[in-house]
Image 1: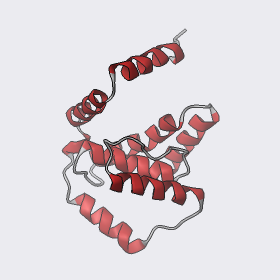
Image 2 (image 1 turned 180 degrees about the vertical axis):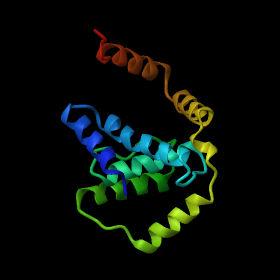
Image 3 (image 1 turned 90 degrees about the vertical axis):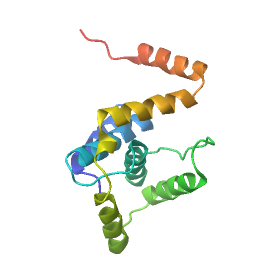
Image 4 (image 1 turned 60 degrees about the vertical axis):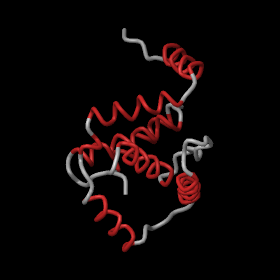
Length: 148
């Protein structure tokens, strides 16, 4: 279950008209913090991000499942399930929840290190085309909040 403050921040982002990925970023950030403070671990930075995105979808953030082929079919299926779960109130299964938490506790904490996250973001960027990266940078420059 996500923290109440995380859900509030995501709701505030939605009210400000920010994109679903920005709203989901709050949940990913929360997950990274959980790993860093030792609540549990993750096998990789990618898994930590995936857990955050899953929580976001289940909390009702309108984040569509991935379309590209770089994501496994199982991951796409899970994302579709998460979107459906976010559309209706649900209560997680206790046994499954406990088993998942126990499995994550056995994983390492270095997956949320700056180096691991840096490596993951670089790898994710390299999959995208040059034109796509350039367009994203231009949009960021155009929509960046200016300091006064």
